[in-house]
Image 1 (tube, helix red, strand yellow):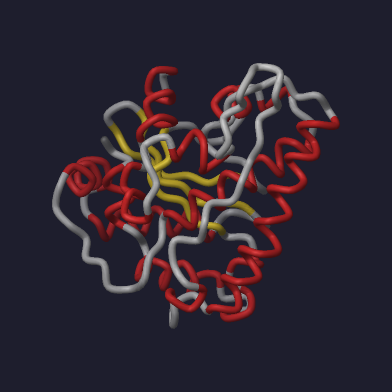
Image 2 (cartoon, rainbow, N blue to C red):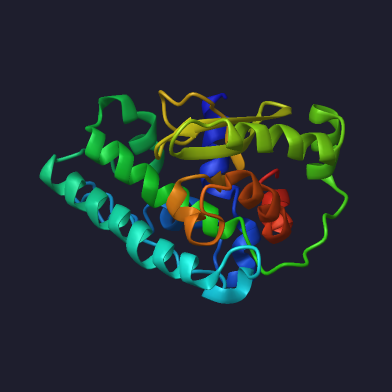
Length: 241
């Protein structure tokens, strides 16, 4: 993906979250950092977004206990740890874009926890209570053009999610005028300079066991299939702009 596309994503992709009171600067300042430093001397600081739904709002597809533990324990720990790493390691990057563009230069601690902080904010913003229909428009047109149909896209995405060995993420990304699916290990994401798949993130699914094990145990395929019922298609469509 060209740098101008990435910059456009960082600045604009989550205007859809205005439904929960978050502006276009959300992706830069909230999804991954939230606070833009007052001066260049101040370090980047990651924050959690406010969860855009109640813990039980995604039931019966994702249970409330899983969401609560996932958000308050796992996600919170990523945010805390990456901020500690930024200070302790004197990481010089002042923007989320620069942080991820230089991931290959970061420690494993900074990379994994920075990715975990950002990825989870993106993940929460990709979901809403069940019942949202898929609307025609630019996103659906791009899905049809890239995959042949919505069902074929879901099959390709599901395969990427199910075949990710161990822990990681499945992604739908925009790369130029095309959409593509893929996955990343651990807490990597498509904004990282050394990511296995690169592009503008449109949707993401967490396939770490802590995202589904309380309800689904080892049945990752059932979790993936049921997740489509809580996808926030409006947010995904907004990221196409």
